[in-house]
Image (cartoon, rainbow over all chains, first blue to last red; front, side):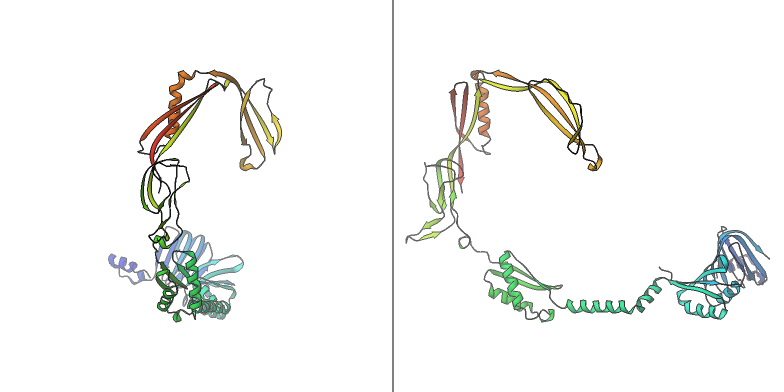
Length: 86
Length: 373
C-alpha cells in the first residue's frame, strides 16, 4: 500500500476510522489504483465493479483491463470515464 | 524477457469469484476478458504450480498454460539433456585439447633457417603436452644445433610454441658473392681513388658503359688471390649530348576550322540510327566519343558522337641562319636534361652538320662525374 494516504489524512488532522477503509487514485483517466477492496463483482472491458468495506465501487469506461489484482490492491488500465461509489 | 510470467487462459462463468480466491494468495496481472467467456491473465513464474493447483480445485475450465521469460528459457535448457550433454562434451574436449601444443611458429630473419628450426623442434618434442615441454632445454638444443643462430627464445603462447631467433651477422667478406665495379657511363677517366680491390683501368683511359673498373679481388705477397669487395671512387669526364635537327622546308598539318558533327546509335554493335552526311573534305581527322544510353548497362544501347575536322597541309620554309640561335638553345636544353645537381660544365662543343635541305646541331657538354663505386 502507498503510505502517503496516511500522511495526507494525518496532515489534515482527520482521525475518522471510516477514512481508513479504502483509497482510490484515478490517474488522468487512464489508470486507477485502489486499495482496500474486498473482491471483484463484475469484470468486463466496459465495467469493473469491486466491493469495499461499506459498499462497492463501479468503474466504467472502455478497453478496461485489470492490470494487477492482489489481496488488497488492484490496478485498472484503460479509458476510465466514470468512477462511482455506491 | 526480463519478466518471468505464466499466462493462463480460462473459460467459464463466475470468473470473478475464482479471481478473488486466487488473489488472496497469488498476485494476478493483466486480466483480460475475451469473447465466449474466455479470459486470460498472468501470474509470476514462481507461482505456476500453485495456480495450477488452485484452478484445479476451483472447477473452472483451464484452456492453456504458457510461460515466458528468462527463467523459463533456463528451465527448458536444463531439461534438454541432449544439449547439456553436447555442451559438456564440447567443454571437456576444449579443456582437454587446450593442454596440448598444436603448432610450432619460428620467427627470425631467413625463411630457410626458420623452416629448419621448425623441423628440428618438431622432432625434438617428445610430447605435445604443455606441462612436459621444457622451453629452456629446447633453447639450448637449438643454439647447439644451429651455428647461424646467435640467440633464441622459446615460449608457449596459447596453443603455439613460439620461437624467436636472431642470426649471427657475418662480416661482408664471409658472405655472398663479390661484384666488380662497373662503369655507369662512357667517359675519360680523370681521377682514381682505390680503397679495395684490383684496378682494371688507369687515368686517361676511355671507358664505355659496362666496362669493369675495379676487380673484386686482391693478390697478396705470396701471389694468392683473395676475394674482397671492390671499393673505389673513379671520376671521369663524360659527355652529355643534345641534338636538334632543322629542316629548311617542312610540312605541317593544321585544322582549317571547318568541321562536321554526326551521331550514330548502336544496339549491340548494330547501327540503328545515323545522321551522318557526306562531307567533301579533302583531308580530315576525326574524334569520337561513346556513351551508353541505358542505366547500369541494362541494354547494349550506346551513342557514338563523331567530329570530323577538315585539315590542310601547309609548307613551312625557314632559314637556318635566322633560327640558328634558337636551334642551338634547343640542343643545349636537351643536353642539360642529363646534368646532375651541382655539376659544373667543363666544356661545351657545338657541331653543325649541313646536308641538302637540313642541318643538324649537336651540342656536347663535358662534365666530371663519379662513374662507379
